[in-house]
Length: 323
Image (tube, rainbow, N blue to C red; front, top):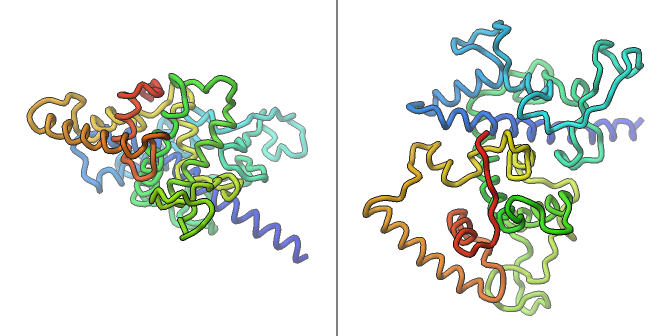
């Protein structure tokens, strides 16, 4: 009995963790549309994200059959969310086909959640769970503010992940002999170092080469990173990032497009832009000098510096498309 309770508790933890990551993926997909809407206050953005996530009309009503919310699209595996699932054919009279009307079962791809347990739409992943602010039955609907926070968290980490991907990929493709699993492992290892900091130097430690970089140089992220670990926004990055479906790649992972989406400009004109460019180039020279003898993509470098280095050094580039 205790073993059963323990298994149920463990599964509940997995479902809770993955449900939040699914919410982040949906929230991030909403973020692009919100940021491309001009003249919106933060309150307006939160309201729009709330309505679009849940499928409400602009006036907050629910009942227009022509409005399909982002959450419903996710649960149906349509549009940009089609890449989340493995599809398993179902026999109409199959005992596991509880609805008896379904022709297929949607199973969240294991690489999207990195757990050993299967997560099936309609069982572990239900509308009741994903629309709520908690896993409790009849929980209040997740708010626009929380969705905006989820989206921003996924975006922050996505920019870090993009810098790592730009270094690894070759013109948006995998290096010769590498697999998607290799790419994902590299991405997770490097993000684990970026976010967790790796091991710290200790005086006299055998792994420290005294380069004052604050890390144990023998640090092997794969030896410490939990197999199921993923950063907030990992699912969104796999789904909408440089190795996702070309049709739905997010412009929010492209630095120039991000500036435009936030109301900036792609063109660097004028005295202020020139001053910023000169400052950036000085910073780049320092970064290259610090990285001599190794990769210039060191911890602590800004996304802007990493991306500029990638372009200037012709290391690797990835063609990002509008969603």
